[in-house]
Image (cartoon, rainbow, N blue to C red; front, side, top):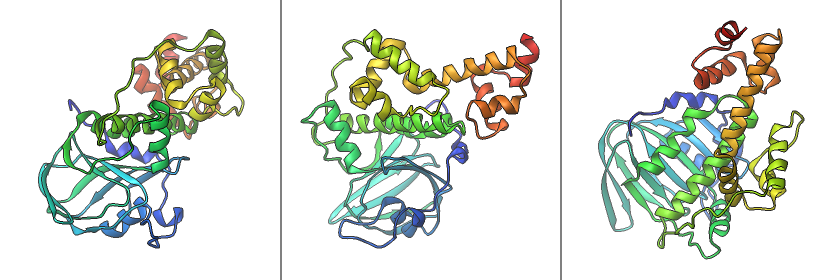
Length: 317
């Protein structure tokens, strides 16, 4: 990768201790992934974002590991971001020796168990993917798509690694934008896993056309709504009569942008209009557009324009 995302941007995520989500009791199927990780790593994630699908994205920094990771109720996909090091993973009689470095991923399929020997501290971003999410995306893409994820150990896959690490580089402390981004990211990561990490990789057909003008207008009206309209990916897709997978592809075909990118650009235009045409304070603009703080709004505005809101206002008025 040409550059690493700033992983500490995960501070924008709402935190959630694993024990607050589910009991840490081991069931017949295993523990929730975040609970098992906390048990075996003897620490808590720096930050964790929960998704309404039941999945999560977490950032961990932990000490060397020499222990058995017991079965989990989620698939776990990891993008490594630490210093290069050799490691060993034992599953039954099988031994995998690999090198952790940026650009590699680790996949622990749901229900599997293995012993890990990692000699140095680890910096990693993890996706906890419920199997029902994997199956939903597989059904949307191709009803016959396999959902048997392969076990991967320090497997080169810069695309998946970059996608997972990108979770730390876009979040803006804006609940609507961040939730839509997480939905898109998890679906995109799941699509990538189906394409590259199953026993029979899925082949995706090219996008065939965008949304009809009527459906596109309805989608844009929902995204532009200043009310409490539901702009989740599920709501947008349902309103269009499409699956989430096909809605995202068709929306981008029609507009050139993903739903999240479109909404982000719309919020920027709203901010510019308010800064240029009204005397509203920057903190009032931030609150009106759903940002958690003036600082979060200013950081998001500067990321897109290269200027702070105050500097931009002085320049254009």
